[in-house]
View 1 (cartoon, chains in turn brown, green):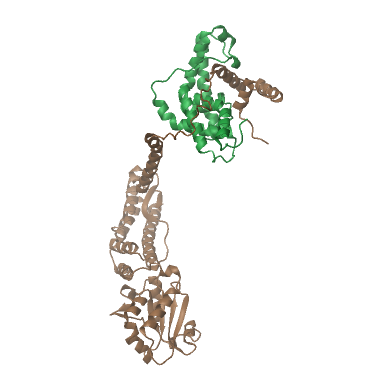
View 2: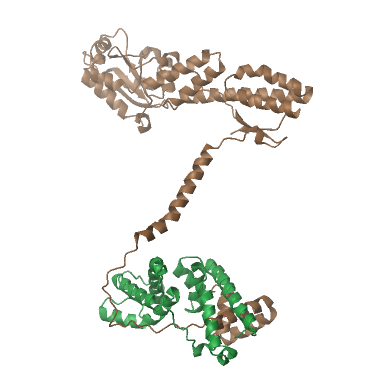
Amino acid sequence: MSAPRPPLETVRAWVEGTLSPRDREAFAAALAADRGLADLVAEYADVHAATVHEAPACPVTAGTLRLDAPPVRTPVLTWVRRATPIAAALLVVAGAAFAISRMTPSEPSLVPEGGPLVLRAIRAEGREPPPAPPAILAHYTPATDERIAFLSDYAEAKAVARAASRPLLVFLSLEECPICRGMRAQAFRDESVVRAAQGFVLAAVSPGDLDPGDPLLRALTGNRWPAFAAFDTSGALRREHGFPLTGVPPDANAVADELKAAYAALPASDRSRPPSWDDLHAAARALRDADDEEDPAARRAAWLSVLKRRVEGPLADRARALLAQDSKAAREALEAARGIAAKEGAAAARARIDADLPRFAGTPYADDLRRVRDRLERDGAFPPVVLAR
Amino acid sequence: MPPSSIPVDRGGFLTLFEDLKDPMYRFLYRLSRDAHDAEDLLQETFATLWRKRDQFRGEGSLAGYVRKIAYRTYLNARPRLGRRKNERPIDVEPSARDGAPDEWVARGDERARRLESVRGAVDALPAGWREPFVLFRYEGLTCTEIAECLGVTPKAVELRLARALKAVAARVRGLEAASGGSGTAA
């Protein structure tokens, strides 16, 4: 079934007398019943009759047609004219996007009296922060004094690796083993080994400290000793390798090759731009300092400094969560003031906010609390508030 | 009847030209409102068609394809056409075939004057209204064909046509009222 013909086409056909007899009959009936259609027909008929303009005969013949004439170039001005509206539209869109990105929540004075107060900092969310990183992360590096250095506490090494989002390399060995001592004295001081170890957190573990069923011990089967085992950042074992027991310590080349093989066995995400040790140290120190800091503004600045470092992972998560906890504390202060306002009146609520303010001094939460207090004073009632997003 | 593909040999192409030149010339004349401009545009249209003769893929009618090229040629030329100062008068002789109103026939010169006045109203329409009106009124195209040619939607064509029709009808009725005429002439 074809699409219905637009009325104007039918009207044209009616006026020009090209409708089929059947259509003509139907159209005549429609015309009699529809005054609007009759008006349209009259209008078109007037225009049709008054626009009889014969075009002159075409003077071009096949003989005078120049088929090989070069194409007429579109003037540059025409291109400019065509491009101008597009360029203008792009500029308007870019300008609008820039203006929107610069917009800040309305000032309270712009909010109608009695209307909601839009908060700028106090948010709805609040979550438990991940555990504090081990203190040693503030200065740990896999190599010191031009030799690789192992953490002797396996649990601590795992915590460092988790906090630093770095893979963990375990050296299964014994302090009193002469082969292991030989490796520490020779191979572990070699430049190629130090370089190959930079990507890992290193731990030296005695097999006696592991459960008998620990998968790490597989590396020691087949008369092999000592051994390395590599864990990725999610804690999954990716490679274990024991050196053949020959009575002499493996040389630096064998150790460096094994460290490189262990690193290559990690997922690509663990190998692509891990956080630098400098950033990790600075972030861990900032978190530690913030824990000891009394001044709310300085504490907040320390958390924000963590987020400026390239340390995505548990350290950044902890900083974000601690910031959110401050927001949660401010929200609780607000709720407490609201409850007091309902029971004891606006003056008591203002006093409560004043008492809470020092806890948030120098932070944007204090600004929000002060704005609520000002509205309490102005309106004599606790204002409706919209939490920041 | 024009062929369904563009002949690649010069002889076949000239035959195609003979088949299509009159409707295309009229089309370009209506758009440009100048016989000499229409002649130039026709030359350019068929020179373009000759250069691109292997690009027609048989989608739609060949006449529609040529009309699209002609329209684009006109669009490209419109700025320079608009700058021409020495516009030449055009032939205003009415066509007996179109059946003019009796009272206009009786009044000879007056009819020509009215036709010229209405033509002025059509010419004064914004290009966005005038072009669909010309294609609808003189080329007999459907709204869908016009939409294809102009690169807009059929709904947009209907809307522009309705506005153009209202504007021209107002001019026609104004003339009727001024001369004490009767109105509908169909």
